[in-house]
Amino acid sequence: MKALISQVSKDSALDNALLCVFNRCMGEIPLYFSKNLFVNPASVYKFALIYLFPLFVASHGFMWVVQKVSYAPAVYAMKLAYMPFIALALYVYFKDMLRDRPTVLAAAVIAPVFIISLIMPLLLNEPISTGYYVTDTAGLGITVLSSFIFYAMLRDKSLDLAFIETISAQFCFVISIYMIVYFFASSGDKISVTPEIQIPMAIVIGAYLAPVNGRVRPPIWLIALIAIACALSQLRENVVIFAIAGAACIVRGFFFRADWRPAFLFVAVSISAVMVLPATRTALLDRYQSLQLFDNISVDIFNEPSGDIIKKPSGDVGSATKEQKIEVFVDSSLNQRFVEIGLMSQELSKSALTLVMGKGFGATYENRGGVLIYYGERVHNAHSTPFLVYFRNGIYGFILFALPAIFAFVTLFSKNTLLFRASLTLGMMYLALLFNQYFYWGVQFGLALAFWFYCFQKRNEV
Image (tube, rainbow, N blue to C red; front, side, top):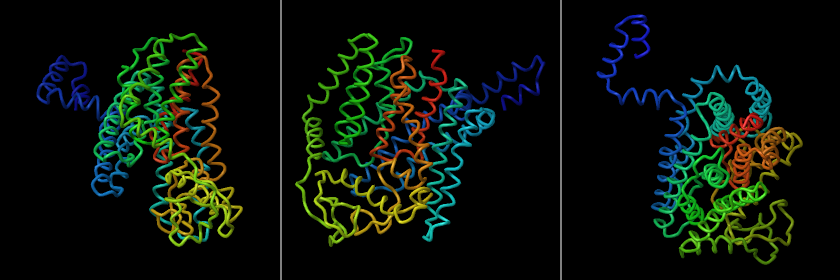
């Protein structure tokens, strides 16, 4: 409407008067939202990240505390929370993406993954789950599109480091409060669903220990809050990523003669915040003790009457008949990840074609002997993303998935602080993906990848 009035009254003395009347009649609030929310993809992303996503995570946690079951609508809502952002950003940046050579080249390289993964289920003599087929295709599509979109926003300057640091700090604050509240509301239970804190956490830690161009560091109390939340979440990957991200920044600062005082304060505050509270000490000790191994036992897991090898020492899933001496962790969740990998490997080994091409979108694997006690006869998902990508998208898809991790590791040693920060962020994302599946429907992964590629391109300009 504002643009229409400007066009109609172009070169007219009434132009400013009409616009002034329009503003007064409609009010400033609609114009604010039109400019800052509905027209600006970055603001829509911020709204989804800081408000919608934590809301759905909290609703899942509430249902878990009350009913002790996973609340499927909340899980799907978390995946769909970013869809308004994706839709609006496509509308705004689609032409720019088509004109950008690196984006077009990346799309051409990735396209065979979609083609192969769409065709493979049709070639296998197995029933196709239409729902899984569609959601897998859409999930990988969202991951790819989000990386293209964030890259376009970085090139357009509508997204920059200052904005990324700000929303990451805000997200870490909100989700840390949730994790702490959940721990006490559930009487000390492990958090019901992983809240994808790894990328924002790496960004906040990097902003504190390796600031770019003299930017203001995040407050130290936020670091303490994140440390406490990571401990109380009882997810080992959160604690490991917090420690590794901090250690990487500190080591880099040592070699480049950075100010040692922020590093000292980071270590002192983090350790003090975690150790001063009995609840955090207990949670960390429990997670450490759960890594202990059972004594070697002899067991044929596929002949177990209940198949209940997740709660007790589990066996070798590489063979359905042979008994073996095995070592397993006390922690049933960690054992489940290895069992899933074994079951997927068995499924792929049925033919040379699936070993190379994977099983495609919608692929499932047999829950032999019911060893995954919380699942049915056929299982669709798995925790370890690298193996899941290979299972669905074959060797070619796995190579494309792994290449950015290799590049991020190499550029982690860059003298360019911005590139180091981007490499750290992407590297911590890959570390989290070893234990959990954030890749499909991975908007956060798309941000980390786009941020790294943009910083890599600009490494000689900063």
